[in-house]
Amino acid sequence: MILKKFFFIIGFIFVLFSSCKDDDDTQESVIPLETQTPIDDEALVAYLKSHFYNYEDFEDVPEDDYDVEIKLDSLTGDNSSKTSLWEQIETKTIDLEEQGGNVVATKLYVLKIREGVKDNPSIVDSTFVSYQGTLLDGTVFDGRSNPVWFDLSNVIRGFREAIPLFSGGSYSIQNDGTYSFKDYGQGIIFLPSSLGYYSSNQNLIPSYSPLIFTISLYTSNPADHDSDGILSIDEDIDGDGNPLNDDSDADNTPNMYDDDDDGDGVKTIDEYDLNKDGIPDDSDGDGIPNHLDGDSA
Image 1: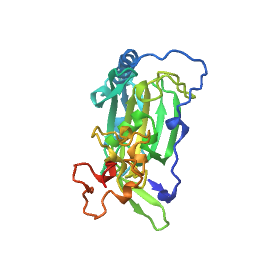
Image 2: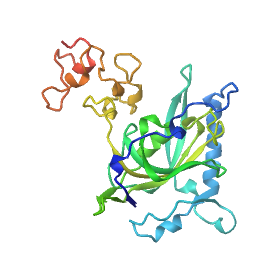
Image 3: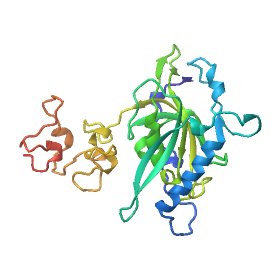
Image 4: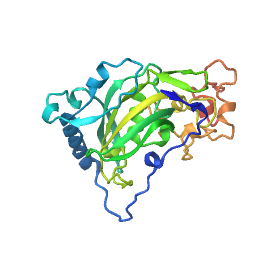
């Protein structure tokens, strides 16, 4: 695929992915996760078992040919003998915590058509993606045929968790200054409503709607949101894979957005690794790096 100078495109997030506003002002009680989760999963499994994608169209094309469009159809009539999505997908389980501390295991499903050849992005990196979003009934609610930059920390949870399962591709710069991509990841993501917009109505997306995205991941860039010299994904202090819930100084700003992680008045970049040996400094030898230790002096 040939693109213009993509690295100079201003990064932005579409309302579709980042909005939390409910288009319906009517206040209704929210269905508990433990009630809605099995309903969504039943709907997704039924869809996966009764549909297929046009995998045969991808079998005879060269590896660098990305002109084939991903299409979904039902296993009926002449298509009844096709291989179902259910036989080809991978599953990822994500624990969500409700108010009150109840933890509910939710599942997203991923079908990898092409995995990509470069490193996988993290859940908080910047990614260059094209996509189309649909409901289970085939309604298209959004899409971009040309890739755009997404900061995965600002998108819906399911998209954030699924995109890192793919890898980007390689690119070359043409004589006219355009970029040519190849070997990038492509596939389909199937999300329960709890990893999308759940009880919120979003334009063409009714509340409690499972979502489908066909995606292509062209490339990604590691992110350092607070420019403190530490990659955002490495500010995951508790090691649960999610740096968005780590806040060392309890100031309601996650470390990955906080340029003074321990709140001691010294910026993280000025106490993280001053001798540049790749090891976080620990002046008082208490086992807590200076940038996370409010009394390191």
